[in-house]
Image (cartoon, rainbow, N blue to C red):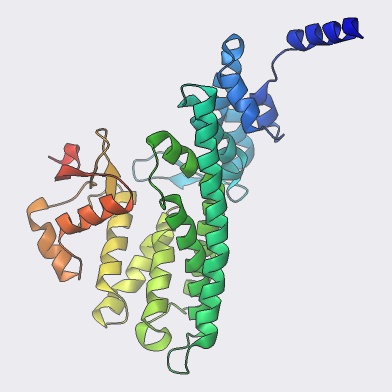
Length: 337
């Protein structure tokens, strides 16, 4: 019996470390324990590096198999679309989250702590989605005849409840940079499907010429439709179409000017143009928040006020508090100075 234990130990020590990258590429499960073991196994550090590299990039073979070229972006570079909705997010986001958590840890105990926080945040998001969905449906059912939303309004409210549950859960707690990054990758798969499903729903609304207005569907429904369009970043042409649709509605009081301004900036930056109202922010290399590329800095607060937006400095401070960050001393990104 003793001899058999010795032989088993020798065989275990001689067994090669698993090729985690190959397993992940084949769609076979990879656990966090395996990822962390590879990260801190000095004899097989290359296995962790290979897994991390695979999770960070699309290989040429994956590009050929899972993507189709659909045109060019404003800089003339090819624009690709996944053949299967959210393929990249589904296939790589969990592994990417694991490798980020392990790579930023100094030891196995710290890696485990980061991953526990990641999984706790994910579980909180699942619970919050369920609670928000129930609450949205209850509000719709209990509203009086004057305030009860239209069928379109009810559908939009439920979709926004899910959209906001995941976004709020991601930033509900303050985390160190490594944990926050891992949480973002862990959430990516679910949020990809939420945003793309909502975009497809909105595209149907536009095609049927049913875009909600304040007078017909209520202010909440109009706001909800805009919010889902604001998050349709994978469909920049659609965002541009919604912006065009909203312009006369703003003039008629049937849509919010502040919502229009936020979408205007989103579309402009997607088209590689400066934003007008400084509503979109980036994290700079110094780790602080500043407005992305913006035209005519001196007149930005005047333009914001005309669209019903609060002064830029107050807005920047609120964003920094919401995302547990800090505002840059200058309101505009350094490359805009």
